[in-house]
Length: 175
Image 1 (cartoon, rainbow, N blue to C red):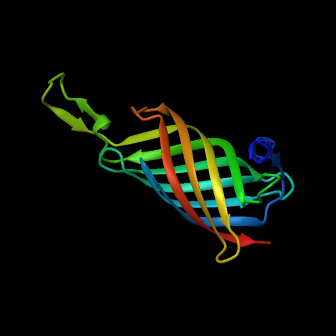
Image 2: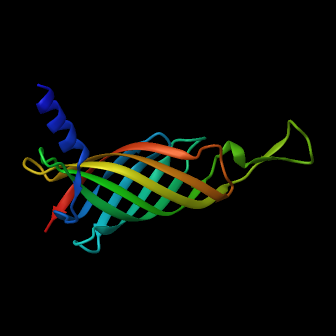
Image 3: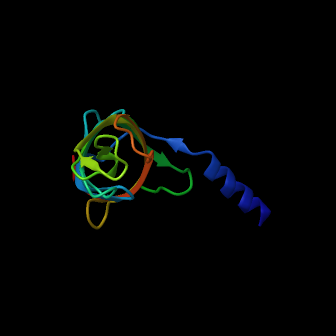
């Protein structure tokens, strides 16, 4: 029994990475802690899986708003020597711009009075990173199911948030 356990653990720890994609584009939706919306992914190169991801979201924070994000991503299929799972790791970086018409941080004092505020629209601009794990449903329907963590930093009108977690479901277009 110990021999099988050691072989299994060694097989799991000696993961191999491949670099081939089974699809060239995907479109779907993403639901996250702060952002919920549409996501599109396109691969420019099948050999090293460099791609582009564009997202448009309705923002759940404050009283609502809209955010557009663009990423350059690298997708790495993950292969175990023992079990072949259609599992991919995705890393990337990019930028975002957002518009928040009713953001509470957009309030500022009028004439220095603590109780008297103007409401102003807020535009945010910043940089993003993304780390995703994606599972490809290959036999039944061409779908991907993914979870992600997206840390971000805003240069213009920063808010208190710095990371977003989400779940995505995309329909894939195969070669």
